Image (cartoon, rainbow, N blue to C red; front, side, top):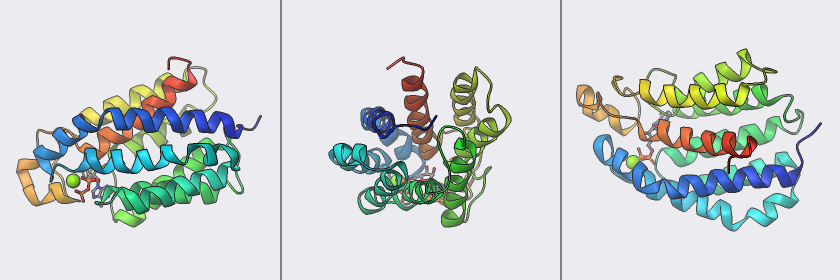
Length: 206
Ligand code: ADP
Ligand code: MG
């Protein structure tokens, strides 16, 4: 079974709407260890994605994904724009060969690797990768399990919590040194919001 463009469209819609709704929370998180723009950056980017939703819903999945990536690169700004943009551009490239849902872990891995390459960053540095990498591990380890969605949701929430004691070594928060400890990373939280929205929609909760 291959995911239909309409299903993909509905997932993009809830994820974008959810991150827009969480913009105030993301702003507060970024005020603590950054410059306070993560909420407005993400809101701008995902509102731009929502404005293209009908066109995205008409495209093959690879083109749809790349359109999201280009839109985010052009509109989000900050460090997170090119990083989230790279995720979707690379995942879109992968989707020209791979299929959803069966190749989900491979497609997701391509996106995560692109973030890592673009950000010259890895898990453990208090960034969005501290959610994306554990979720990728769950997708690989638990593929085919009936409770995969629940496991992804839990992996994402637990991963956000694990950013609190971390000291940032990448991005703006790294300028704070030890003072970055004790706070949730904003990008980790926005990744979790996006992933939870997709999980909830897939389970029919939204
Ligand atoms: P900026 O830091 O330029 O103000 P945002 O506030 O929009 O950009 O995004 C900040 C988030 O971007 C951080 O919380 C972190 O998760 C993520 N981030 C920053 N630098 C990197 C990097 N090199 N690799 C991965 N993620 C990063
Ligand atoms: Mg910021």
